Image 1: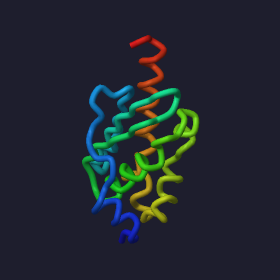
Image 2 (image 1 turned 30 degrees about the horizontal axis):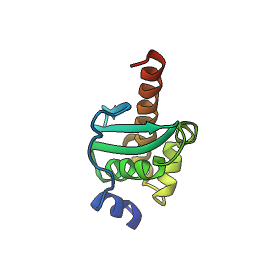
Image 3 (image 1 turned 135 degrees about the horizontal axis):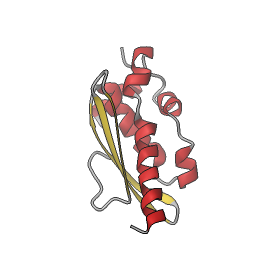
Length: 125
């Protein structure tokens, strides 16, 4: 059901964990399938210098979480906001159609973490 690249990112995920004292936290989930993703970010000079994830879900959910962290590190806030769930799936050489909307919430979680960061920055937190 899953291709080699998805299986690689599932079996050997990168950037697992949580950043201590993160600048932003994003958590999203899909109640229909039960996948939950939490992404934490560290930002310096408008650039994501660290991105970590914790995910409860299927192979696709874990693989997409891992892939988004790899794609986002080093990007500016604007560049990171341009990442989409489709670009994550493409970077993994595709996902089964049934897994696209229920397991690929990775960009949504990253965007939520960035929004949290921006809100905290605006408020001076």
